[in-house]
Length: 374
Image (tube, rainbow, N blue to C red; front, side, top):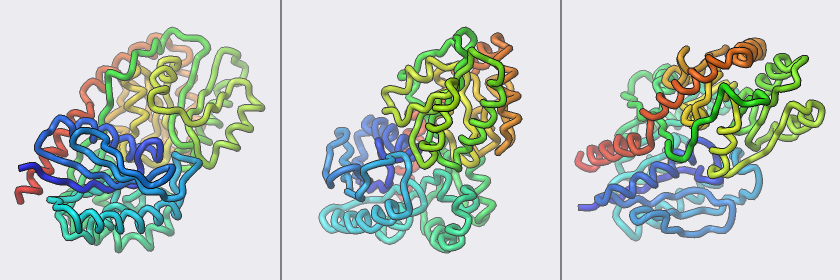
């Protein structure tokens, strides 16, 4: 008998970052499983609507008043989604039967799932784990009891990296937390010629937000670029730092802030780079790092959750958080060593081959079957 799953998540492309991307690709993969049917309640950049996304997935897009800055959700955006998604979920439950719920992020989706009288799984993504995001330090004091209640009521709790699992267990060690890593749509990405291109192009893709550490990358790059005329920094994304970074690009002709780009535009951008930098202060598991790896790029990454699964000496360099000097030193090393760039890029692509959304979807599918059978 087909099992009906109610999925909740306030991010879905073009809104949001990693959680939205993960939801999108998992739903695409779930189409292969004929014995499940999924209904997703998510946010929209426009009017409320219903869409048949795949043969076995229907999406209800809710208007949360979002029109700009699609990669960043404010507290008001999240709260608006919570109110409207809670109401929509109850409307759907009154009309049809669901066997379980799947909440992407413990807050707010997990808190909605907790009140639906359904067994549910919570996928932890990063900032929904207290202590993960320094900018939310005070907010965590308020949300911690809610998050514990969500975890306590969940049938299963899943983190997207071992590092995030460890952070979650530091917050609350009494629960069992599984790991299902992010994947990559490998066929979309081509191998960059990391060791060959000029100018030497440094790439960052992601939200332009303080928690992503982009300012430290900017400082590190400007230190590294002194006296060089064949280097370039490309920043792809939107967010609250866009204006500041755009002003910097007007001063330095070696910096290019290109703003948000659609997923289908990204493969060509990765292909044009020599090295990818993730200067983040906190992650679950970085989707953009996986994309860069699939594009055969060497990686410079801060030591955040997910890094140990993705970056090792054979494919990149790990630096301390908030350390622009180490970023500059890593760039200097790779700038001069074309052989290492090429070998690291090849190792990145080989690692990425072992991580797929198909594999992640299969793990969730098996989890769904266990919960529905229990």
